Amino acid sequence: MNEMSTSSHAAELEASPICANAPVGMLAELTHRCPLQCPYCSNPVELERVNTELSTQAWCRVMKEAGELGILQVHLSGGEPTARKDLEEIVKAAVDAGLYTNLITAGVLLTKERLQRLADIGLDHVQLSIQDVDAENADRIGAYKGGSAKKREVAGWVKELDLALTINAPLHRQNIHNVEKIIDYAVEAGAQRLEIAHIQYYAWALKNRAALMPTEEDFMQTARIAKAAQERLKGILVIDFVVPDYYAKYPKPCMGGWGRGIMNVTPSGRVLPCHAAESLPGLTFDNVADRALRDIWLNGEAFNLYRGTDWMKEPCKSCARKEIDFGGCRCQALALTGDAANTDPACSLSENHANWAKVAREESHKPPPDFIYRRMGAKTP
Ligand code: SF4
Ligand code: FES
Image 1 (cartoon, rainbow, N blue to C red):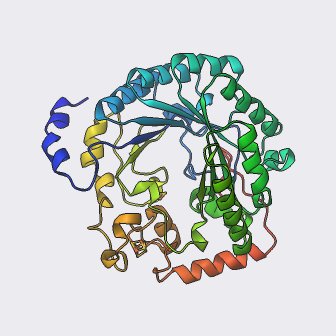
Image 2 (cartoon, protein in one colour):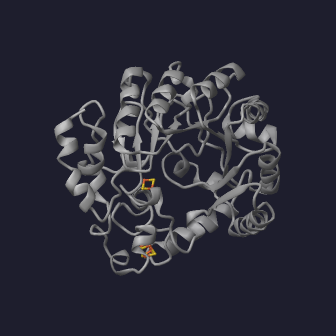
Image 3 (tube, helix red, strand yellow):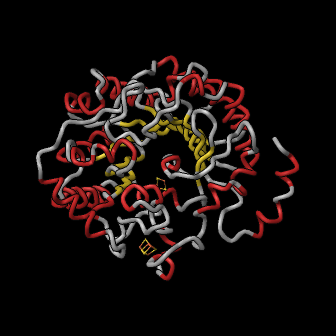
């Protein structure tokens, strides 16, 4: 770690009105390998290969640097993080660094013994993804036979081991009819939190948009169901309901705002302001092998490009919400308008919004095409 660059930025850290002194969280994508093939995978279309992955030692050093930087939580993610044989060592390094550890997993590769080992090391939280509550449909969406049954088993182990549990259920037109049962599933599993997140359309999901986009009527119905459940289950289950951008009035502050609270480390060590940032052309991303995390967070070119509000064009530039949503998602703005600095078309004030809402309404009323599954090594369509 470069001590010079670390200490010389202390003054500007304190002076900065824009970014916090340290990100709150770090998403550590330990590998892009995954036994599932979800058509809405948020990993980049070009996946990183196993021979480019950071070593155990390198990940342990990243955890130490994250703790020293002041990061509070590490989200151990993928692909599927349990595909790494050295997960225990990486979790130990994170625990030793004082980080709150969250394992984001599909669960299908876990054994009870391994989860017990991770709990003994100090793992705090498990975020278990489900594709649906209908086993056949779930296994079809994830292209993994038996996955649904295994996930139920894993949810039971998480509770037995007294770890905190979040169920994460990405929602789309091919499971939206089961939203009530998904809420019941989370309650029965003893989860503290349920994330019902409508798909965001970039990377693989953009290729599958027509197969995934719900109708506005179905979306409105799920919003009503989720709102009622939030009231009914107060004190039992926290439900985070993420609306589909195409039917939104205003966008979400993607990643809490670019370079404000989260940093993302890819399997090969590139440090990104968001997990899809590599879709933005012309950006250079620093690697943990070459530069200290703190220096990257403060001075990395990619982190500063869309940090704050100075980069904004109209209508964001003079909008009262610009420090609420930070213009939405840069990656979606690029994917849908060709310019990452444009207002996210999820915003009703964007000149592109009406077109994209129209596309969503049309696509969602046609029969869904077949999924294009995320397959490592397969030719990109
Ligand atoms: Fe947010 Fe920009 Fe839309 Fe205003 S114009 S609501 S800042 S995205
Ligand atoms: Fe990159 Fe939203 S996914 S800014």
